[in-house]
Image 1: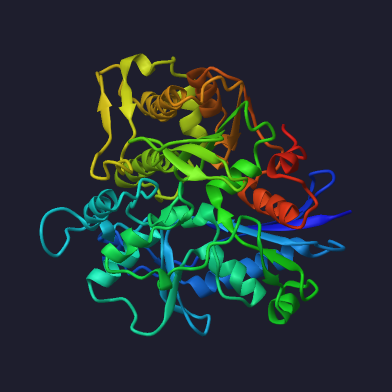
Image 2: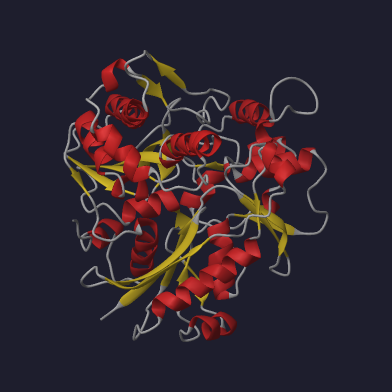
Length: 474
């Protein structure tokens, strides 16, 4: 039995799994809360998102140790996680300051001089530099680094600005962090078509390529598990650790067995619709992202998803607390789903556009409820209309994908807790997208995909699509 381990550094949880490469079965798994946020309350109100990167690595090592317990041997370790955000690492390999997460909005603040935001300035600079494959966005590594430099908060001593999964892989191997194209693309500074850090753009922003990690091909070895971490994890020293990949790409690798015929929808806190294409161009709403095999994923990445439904749950909780003596922490999802299921399709004319936290293109945009009347503005109607609104966002994404040549998909694969825990949402999505949905038998798709990445890097699988053949579906 040949097994590979995968680690996923998520925003809410950190997960490790061990996958039997022959059968595709999970031989061990562990998940721990990512309770490492350090953002002061007043800064959180300003849209800041700061975390303890060193503590995240400790939690990842603990989860990995728990997952591999009882497994006879692990042939390699793959890592994935938040493919946006930024951690500064000093020459000694230790973090300088906090990990600034992907939800950080400081890039949307007004620049010190002139008009527009820091993101606006970066996009103008990208256009002037001809950086077609760079799309700076709030929360991206490049945006946060630019903000620090513009506000004279960049360290004076040598540092590397890296992604959290890259720092985790480097820490496991006792090596300097390196990155791969799937993560580098999440910086806004890496040209996905030219396959390089876009030096002209970087220098025009007053930044330096020397501040960025080396980009290696996906599934490249970073090093062997260090003696210190090997003892803690319970694996032999020297087990190969491979360069981390983006979590969207890892989820695709860990969910999809048929690359040409499948549409992947992943709903967790937010949501993503992804298709695999040999060539892809970004549009105003869709983002072309490098995939580990040298091709691309065309992705509709929305801020609608689990957080949208959670917002409605929190509204109902607050009503209960304010008027009926509720505690404010009731588990209301089952009741919301039951009420929504009892409501007819179309919610009797109530329509919800669940953009409560804006879109990536229009971060200041907000949601709306339309068509409310005395007979259709009940909890059940609101829950039904919100779920249908989420499905509408993804249906619109797929319509744009079809216009880009990504039509003809035969099967929908669903991943993420938002899909697994809400049968009504699954039904609504199947109808909206017009295809049946399959769900992987395993629950941690990104960590599973990271384990398959290790199998590709180790040579057990000939390709990522070959690795996907071991995936089983419910």
